[in-house]
Length: 194
Image (cartoon, rainbow, N blue to C red; front, side):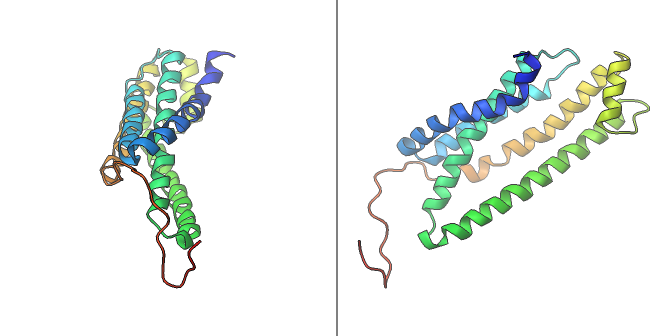
């Protein structure tokens, strides 16, 4: 497989490798340390992307995406498990809908913010740039001059992504630290015990 084709698969592979380990670790230590470690992995991968140059190697990009994917894989499942453990069984469908809605809205807003940041950074860094990614690709293919400027624009954009990646550290500190042994589900009035 050519190196460039592996790069987009890095996050999926990283998440696939991290999820089973994160599940076992969450059962043993609770969600908080696992999620904080996952955010740390994602931060390291994102920091790597803030250091882009005009000659950044594919292996570097792939390795950074692998770390980002591993970080995401280590945060999503433990966070959701902790969320579902803290609500009543009858509220799980509403909780699932709320989580899905929040994920979609946050993903859309984050993507829009990063796209606008990249557009502005490219307009600032590349003289005569008035278009989008297609014009940037044409400029990069036609001459070597704008490549460092384009790399800098992407670095600035990943700086914003780094801040967005760090924001979940605050709520992660509120997650349970140790799972311990769980007893039977709490009994509520009006329900028959199994």
